[in-house]
Length: 86
Image (cartoon, rainbow, N blue to C red; front, side, top):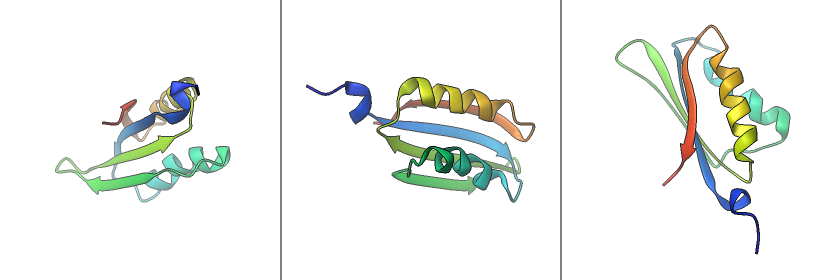
């Protein structure tokens, strides 16, 4: 039987300043790994921020945790975390 992590759908959520390059900077983390997200949703919030939701499969939890942590270090990112998509 396969590893559960390889079949789990994981969701990354990022809240960032409404910057024209914010979405691309989040997506480039996955491009560098050769990972194509299953779904990407980005929308402006009422607080002049951008909310980004990205679903990926076949990525280890530890790798996504590292990506979220690195994104959280960027000055334009307010919040970055992941959870299992339901």
